[in-house]
Amino acid sequence: MLNRKEIMETIDMVEKEHFDVRTITMGISLLSCIRETAEETSKLVYEKIVRKAENIVKVASDLEKEYGIPIINKRVSITPASMLTASFMGKETVLAKALDNAAKTVGVDFLGGYSALVHKGMTAHEKSFIESIPEALYLTERMCSSINVGSSKSGINMDAVKLLGEIIKKTAEMTKDSGGLGCAKLVAFCNAVEDNPFMAGAFHGVGEAETVINVGVSGPGVVHHALKSASNLDVLDMAEVIKKTAFKITRAGELIAKEASKRLGAQFGIVDLSLAPTPVMGDSVAHILEEMGLSSVGAHGTTACLAMLNDAVKKGGVMASGSVGGLSGAFIPVSEDIGMIKAAESGAICLDKLEAMTSVCSVGIDMVAIPGDTPASTISGIIADEAAIGMINNKTTAVRVIPVPNKKVGDMVEFGGLLGTAPIMSVSGESCEKFISRGGRMPAPIHSNKN
Image 1 (cartoon, rainbow, N blue to C red):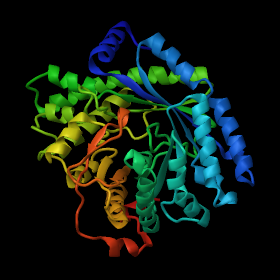
Image 2 (cartoon, one colour):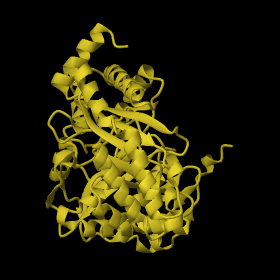
Image 3 (cartoon, rainbow, N blue to C red):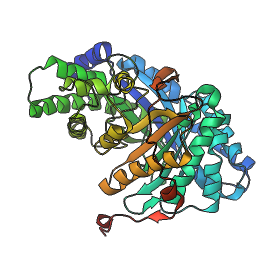
């Protein structure tokens, strides 16, 4: 339990430094709902989600009042939906609508898990499922989708990478009235994890219990404030400050997670340590990096600063909880971080630098708006590059890009709320179409053979 000193520190973090529990996410296994038809399966799926998650919003509200810690999002994640649809290919959107209706009924902000795991190969029903994503995201409001296209053990499914580039383009076109917003709810993974509470990539893994509570804590403002208050430190001392701050954040997050699990009758899963920014001033990962000594994020030295931040956060968090999991690293979504937005506007940050930063953080090319006329093969190339970084380095990487219809480099797009505002960033004008069209599977690296 928190002692008096920790309670007072937590109050200060909330009131002055934008500390919050970013999400309580209930994972629900839906394997018991599989039936022959889309209608039967969807009915059981809706009923189970509503039954299991009916009190999640109330419990989160009660915990906010009792502990004084804001809980920003309440979410549900489900068994990867492609596992439910094998018997009704072509009718996947019936399930999508049921999932969205269930999310609305229980009042959660998002539901994740309209997902497929195709890192080694793709069955006919999984291909049909992936092809349903644009329409599913067009027809729903709160549902999110993810596809795992590679892993360090299996390599990269280049057929899935090619298809996903086309799917992202189609999703952007179908949601063009909102600036291609559907793409903000679609993420491509390599080495996706089963207990990630953050959207758009959350799904409930098959190795999980029936219902699980995973919590994502977030405190970029707390870390920034701690560094700002301790001036003239060398690099080792900065890392110590970050580590101690992450310890405090994680302790508070674990308390909320355990209480929520108890009250919701679910198993306590993990605390995800990811520093997730918002567009609000004082809640930026980019500003932490600048506080370390960069004139702007994107300067030479940015990747080194981010590597130290990520490592120190994990060390502090692991000391505070025996149940650290999820992604647990810094997020650098361009549209959702005011420091990243400004750096992209000024040209200080570009896709190439974001790709380099991905090698040391959780999600690097995230919420990046690109020109609407970007070829599908170029989007596939971006995904392939990120997947290769994840595969070779045995870590999770992800891509969430938005080809904004009718927008070009230099324009801006407004998504609103936590999704923020994004400048349209340039992509390479050189083509990778011939490479992407080859398809097949990229072999796993030699170090994957560890058995």
